Length: 149
Length: 143
Figure 1 (tube, each protein chain N blue to C red):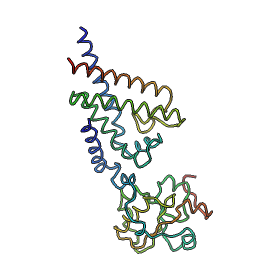
Figure 2: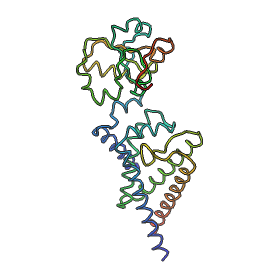
Figure 3: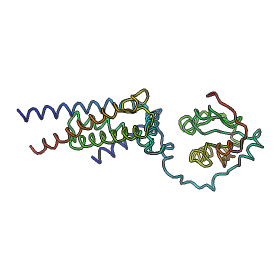
Figure 4: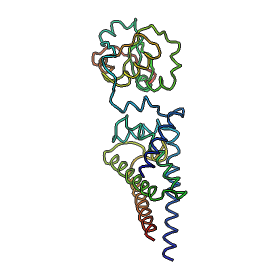
């Protein structure tokens, strides 16, 4: 019985890595505690982001449905799952520009892992929004309404 | 006569549950992300663990169903079948008791039957059948 159970899990894991539309390992890893160091991730406050908005490339890593409801003005939607499924979609992005990543909560594994991934793809300046989109809303900074409304 | 009747019923239940499990697994095998959402909707395990459940259960169902049909490792397959039916009944029942307005996700990732009394009765029927199959398999072993 244990063999069938374990075998199913292993088979399911392998099949999902190979199939398009499968749940890939980086996403499965979100179930585990973040093992990276917070010290490796540079942060930026909502206040600084608001005042420097024109000079930053803000990236919304939440699912597209949430981005379509509302987001930081000028933010680009790049869901965590999308980057891992289609990394080629950001091939044309300028590697020297400063990126600010955010999700809804102040700290989330998606932004940490995204930051790691982007650094390995050659991006030099990556910041994570310290208070998250929740903090942006709390401060009542302007939001852009998406296609969902 | 009694032995033949029991053997026939054992075969029918074995094949029936085998086909049921395989049919239940098909849509979930090809839409794991949607199934992960369906699992998360039950609000039992978190979003992260829902994804692990979503990559595991469809394959467990398919393999168990296959083993029930071909008669391989029957003891284990029959027991896993009974455990699955028990777990499904528990999940559906707790979702209904908590008033969750969700679809079952039992046979299809989207457009499946909503959780309700009929779904609970259906799962109870499956559980009773699975338990009966287990008891028959134990009896077959002794003979």
